[in-house]
Length: 493
Ligand SMILES: Nc1ncnc2c1ncn2[C@@H]1O[C@H](COP(=O)(O)OP(=O)(O)OP(=O)(O)O)[C@@H](O)[C@H]1O
Ligand SMILES: [Mg+2]
Image (tube, rainbow, N blue to C red; front, side):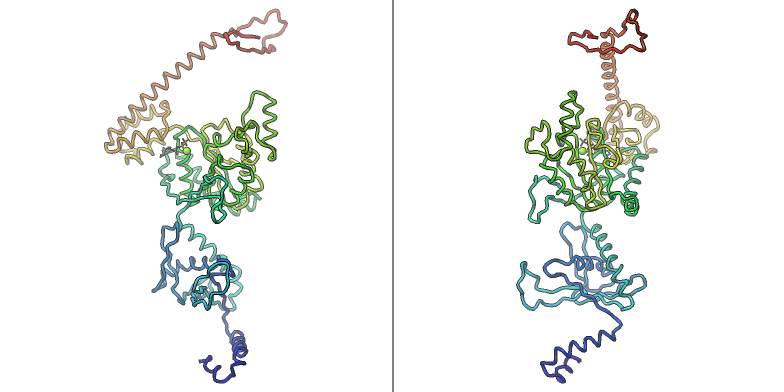
């Protein structure tokens, strides 16, 4: 009506100016203000537009009668969206705001470095003027936060790898990803329940500890070292951690990283809420200075080289490979390790004794978790998971038999699960076979221990350790002997 009035009353040359004038008057007297959030902001995609779309999807699914549905790449759920030019009311801290999804046809394709969509999409937020500050100061942040939460919930978590070596993908990303669907959880993980509860509480404290880390001036990250024999559940534990916290996993293949700076770049490209994993750290890379070499000079040279980023590693057969322990130490707890936040580092190893103490210190590896051979409480978890047996489902004498041999058998949960999987159709046979295997293993372990003891005893007997001290002029407690065992078994003193 106003527009046709304008057309009749004002001559064409005054129309635009008068329109602006009326618009100003209207805005002045209106009790609302309006914010436009367009999909494309100049040439970039507007993050806020995507966030609003996702945020409204949760309310739209309840309120809307005509909705647009989308399912994104790597997403396992459907998102609802407002249809073109639909509106939705939202309430925040007592203030009511109105969102409108505005879709118009793009006039003509203006010059652009990338093709723009034919439709111009955006959201218009209508707010009462008195609530303007509330919206600008906290509502939009709240929308962003909620959207991130929803995105994480809706999207499949990802498992990243740097297996392409140093090369980047088309978006300049050094990581490749696949959806992460490992079914391991803390419920399925067989380990001592008290330890398990401790780890879960620690993880939860970490995830909820933003304010604590801020207050104490620490980077919001935590390191876990999982060590133990093969097949004791180290990798399964990582998957359980990721599933418990809902984090992505970055599986860092150190052998594919050539330099310390490449390692830093990889770190910079990881996102927050993620677990950065280096499996079998002792085998991944030739960190020469880690070895306590017998030769003191070699050791000193190795140390100098390893802590000096500029020089190549000692004795590295790799030649061009200049990744050093120093680089790895900085990666885990240096200035660069705090770029991004809420990240967990997990290293696994079968040989903790081979690792350098600098790598093991608190701040880098805050918690050392020993994944041991299957204990009786762990066995009960496996029996429940694989055969559905609770404590009360098995006769007491059978449980006692199992308990009596489990420690001596030194079997890993992987070995035990194999026995259970093989016989899972016949549960009683599975338990009987497991008991037999455990007994057999315990017996052979005992035998091999007897052999080792005998060997040691024989070695002791071969050494003439009782040396008369009379005539040396020293009390035996003051005597210091340097002994070398010669090849023919004799002692040189
Ligand atoms: N503690 C455990 N609880 C449940 N299942 C386990 C456990 N340990 C091992 N398994 C089972 O054994 C298999 C091997 O486990 P996993 O790969 O986690 O062992 P690992 O300690 O990482 O071994 P490695 O040191 O060789 O990498 C998995 O399929 C897993 O299901
Ligand atoms: Mg493993």
